[in-house]
Length: 73
Image (cartoon, rainbow, N blue to C red; front, side):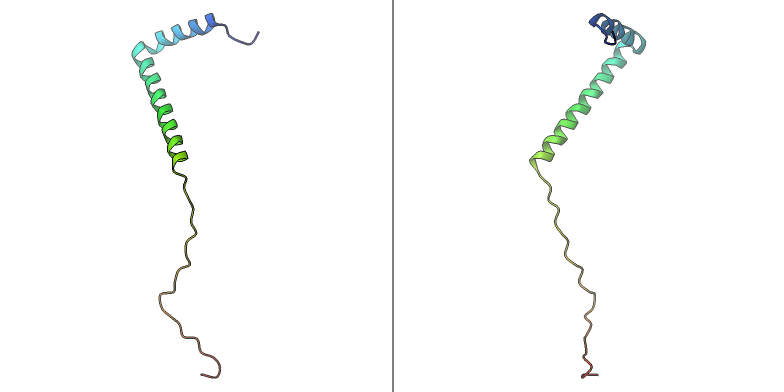
């Protein structure tokens, strides 16, 4: 009872095209298609080039401090 039949979807599509206009509807579908293509392209690039996270080296001090022992003081 809760599902729509093919007739319901066709009527809904005709009403949507009449309200939005043919040009707007086709532009909307074109934008959706471009988004899907860009998403797939991004996923393919991510799989092709795995990113590696490397640890950074500890920063070296700007100047060297001289350590003195008690005997040298």
